[in-house]
Image (cartoon, rainbow, N blue to C red; front, side):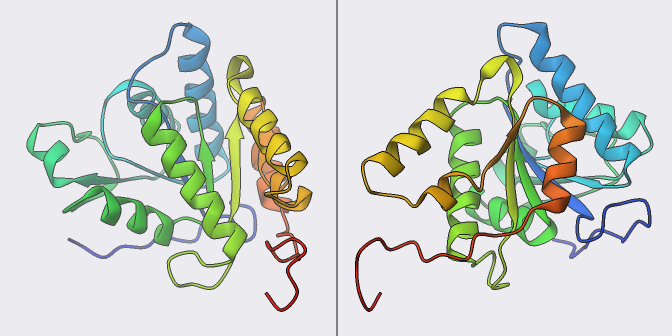
Length: 213
């Protein structure tokens, strides 16, 4: 594996040089999903923000990468050996890394990124996003001891149920409202990126009503 880091781009917002994107390897039932992925990849490239993603051509993953590349952006793919062996690597990436397993894939993406965004997707997308959000809550990304913004592109209301679930966790006493609201959920790519660039981490402990925690 070749060690690489995103190159600072003067057009990128301060502190937001690279965004890791989690999204579906399928296309979804509506062309709106592909249109949104294309718009997000284009927006990243125009702002000089490196796209870090899973490295394949499949579904929305391939669309967001193609859009960023077409707009002159830098795209870094992190792919595991199994998918690489099946020929899923996108051939046009700025650079790529092949790692042994999914855990290493996620850790490497986290190390390269300054923030995380979920586009619509399935189990993998949701699992990756919630892990990133958990590490942000704990202020412990890849041993860096810093919080990183987590956002979601809310195409066709896809992430409305997630927002409702987080609110329910608050209502039932399992999460502070500050942590439920730290997720940046927007339907417009430009607004989403602006809010990620301006994001500040919450300054409350995760424990509720437990002295000495």
